[in-house]
Length: 118
View 1 (cartoon, rainbow, N blue to C red):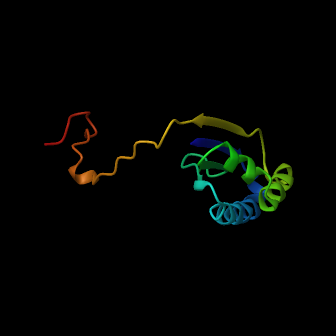
View 2 (cartoon, one colour; view 1 turned 90 degrees about the vertical axis):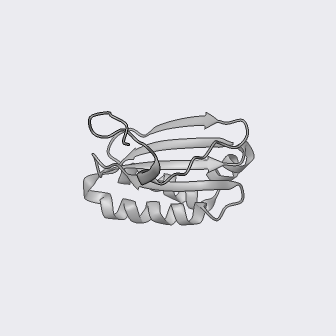
């Protein structure tokens, strides 16, 4: 499995246009064969930074994604929509990732002082 995380600094004056283009890219990318997950979120501390989280079954799926018309069109528009340098981190996983789901109320997470809840 291939995991890609990309941070994209959006130009403030083009934010609405950029978010629309990103939403369309995410919607189309999720339909591709071999795309396990494809998400984009805004950063809580800087709403002009969008973070992409992508998971692909394998290298073939990632290569197919970057050859799609919708991806190429998005990349062609990026210079006009961004303000700064993009950063991408790529991971390769052997097998399926471990996924843990839990109810926060039952998780015995530390409180604000760092003590475990009873």
